[in-house]
Image (tube, rainbow, N blue to C red):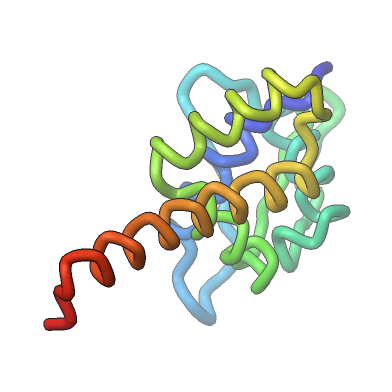
Length: 132
């Protein structure tokens, strides 16, 4: 299995949209992905500190799990890569520079992209004296 950071992003969105605060852990179902692949990615995400709880619900025939809410780290990463433009640009920069597509690199590059975008907006506001 190869780690699929697009799937990690989809899992982050899925948990944010479907987990109810204080509720039970949830199963994750994403079209085009097997329970086993989602299970393995949830293990990686738990190890990276992106999800708080993970409970193995596997049988002999099928790997599966339930998960709790995102951690602060998970919410922070999702907020950084929420916009498709930032996510696609992050992956593009990582690919162009030959960097590893790992959580730490994604955080660093997406933060730099967001910072550059914010500086552009700030400079435009200051240039046009648009303070209101």
